[in-house]
Image: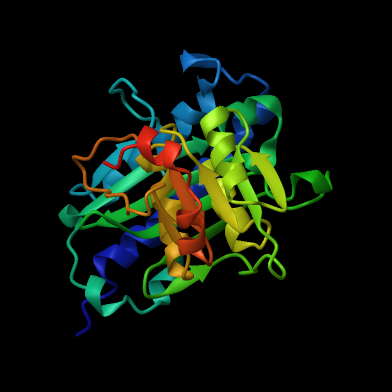
Length: 309
């Protein structure tokens, strides 16, 4: 008798449904007009009712189904009874039909760490730049991001009334990535995507050192990785310690599943164990191709300013 789908496949399949539920919550809060904005550390570090409700929904839904998972969410929320209507108990049947890569088929719940950003691009969310917003659920094992789910709650919002809002993409090492069309930047164009609201001289010096033909400034780490895999940008360059593990775990897994690479500015991988510090202190450098070229262009001033973990 078959033992059924591997634990990690069940976690990813649930995370898919949970991310869709979180995306629906994010849309609902926006449409209500009551965002409930609070500043955490300043005007560029915001939290809204959508961040709070989406995180409660994601963490409670996953921990109810997989009680031994370690789940680390961005928002520090008080322990409270979660309303039943926030719980998502469904899963993606399509994901369960996939064959789990052999190296992950025996993983146990307690070996997995789930990194959750319930609303990546909160500042953009409050400003109406809705295509920048994502829900991120990353799954790590042995310190490595091995699977990720990204929901874009407002995908297609520019099309106006009647358009189907939102989409969900996912990926896993050894399986590939799904829910989008993998594309590359045409020709030898170097298009660099970087931060919209956390820039400084070091960040821009590093971008300039890549000799880009074009620079995009957008919000959200998840959004920037989507730009890489959909052929809108060739590199995501952020020479600053602003990003956290929950920003990069899911996007990194999807990027790596299609052959791309995400490292710090020194070219070193980040570790996603439960006990690591949350800050990605040495910046983010992510590419679909030619990672070595971009690492080689990082100025000495950046390398000295941003020490690897």
